[in-house]
Image (cartoon, one colour):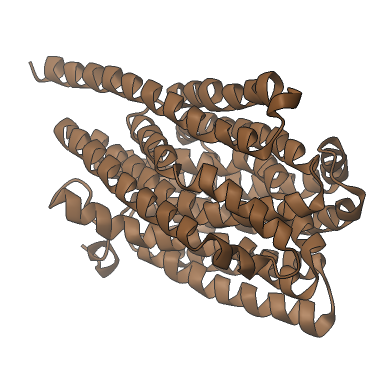
Length: 458
């Protein structure tokens, strides 16, 4: 066994509770660093360009997620496919999956880069983005989309490393890229005098740095996870597995973004001051979501490897431990965020006290009960790791996206309920509905898998 493999977390053997935390902590830190890319953008433009620029950058998040999530979702398929092959010790399948995933990521990134140039302004107009914000938002998005090849290659490469139990190197590489991003933000905005264009340019350069480092790490491996560019071929079997697991995850993420686009449009109707407060609170809430979603990634990869190895009892324990952990982390982060809400929002918003107060409202209604969303995400990861990606997609689309859209049109749009508090209430209610349904689905799927294993052993 190579030195690189000894550094990885063993998902199918050893103490489960300890290994989950060893695996997850670097994933949490990696996700937080990714969020710092956008946070650095907001902080720099907020302090040196004003709250209108904060609103401009914040208004792009829902659209970017809408377009990008479909391709990012495929990285879920990459992770499950590689993890299952590793658990089954099928080296040929591992190699084929990696060399299929990378060209898919490169092609997807190029498609997104071209698509972003044409859809940016029409989508911003459709969302009723205010006139004092729309041009700046369009500039930011067009530049941001040009970095999609690097973004997808990093995500697909990091998915391979995590599937093999290596969560430390993605963290290291993203730390380097994050430092580059912050330094370039300050350089482009303060020294050169750019506004949102400068922070977008800094972001795409840092994404290229992280992608390069991940690909070099895979190229230096001596095992089945070694990446050799000359072997890149899109092969049918691994592609089918990646798409079967990843496409529903991507569709789910994109449709989630549609509901968020509709919610963002509702927020936009209140004006740029509310948009700025909402954007800052959303960015802070993103840190909580990322910490929780890390347990979903852990659940997915641990379940995938143990499925490949046939360890069904271990899957049950993974579910229990991940749910307990995500509740603890979600509550801790949510309570802390609300205690220090004004101080945190003040980092982003220096010239608009009204925007700060709007942010406080959103953090109370969304960040405090965020642990329920974390439970929902863990169940999604477990079910996908069991090889069923379509089920959580359907449940989340109906229970979250469908419910939120119905809430906006049936409740929020009524004059007596037309307030931000009513709008934000749709989040925790939808999380409760989705988690309850996913739990029922998980029990059914797990029992069927267990029964099949028993029949096979007989």
